[in-house]
Length: 191
Image (tube, rainbow, N blue to C red; front, side, top):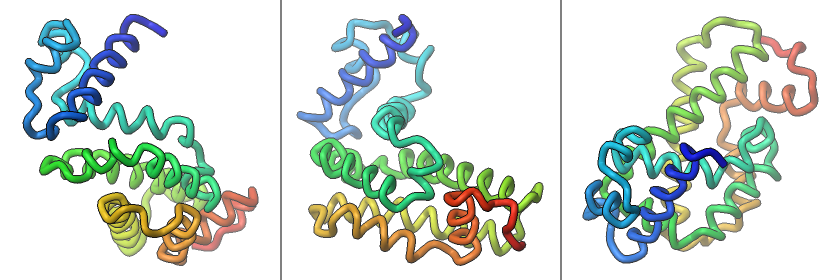
């Protein structure tokens, strides 16, 4: 691990530890730096703000699942939900924070970009139609905020069931793209 990565990991571990005792909204950058024994300039070299750091932490949690299959395969998506459930305490703290819109914005941006690239490549187009772009964003926003509710309501639905319900809510054109990509037949997709 490089010094750059170790510093980011140190800041991430420090923030996670601090979130055990206080809400994210109450934690200041200076406090993170003091506990991690790094300067503020070091923090800002790596992250824009504490929400950027939080997004980095979440990215690291999901990195093992970061492949086409986490987005296209219901079993892989169920594994992502299982990961969230297994780290329930952290995700409850994250999703109950008033600054959730910062993290949700990051997740939405990431998911929309992924599905958009997947769809454009599979469909052989440079831009999605207005209807496709709209339905994609509705699906992603709904998924992010439904996942938030799932966490905050105590994981009452099993991860595999969550995954299947998310697949059932996918717009038909996107479901066709995902199915074709899964089977390797993405060159046969109709627009």
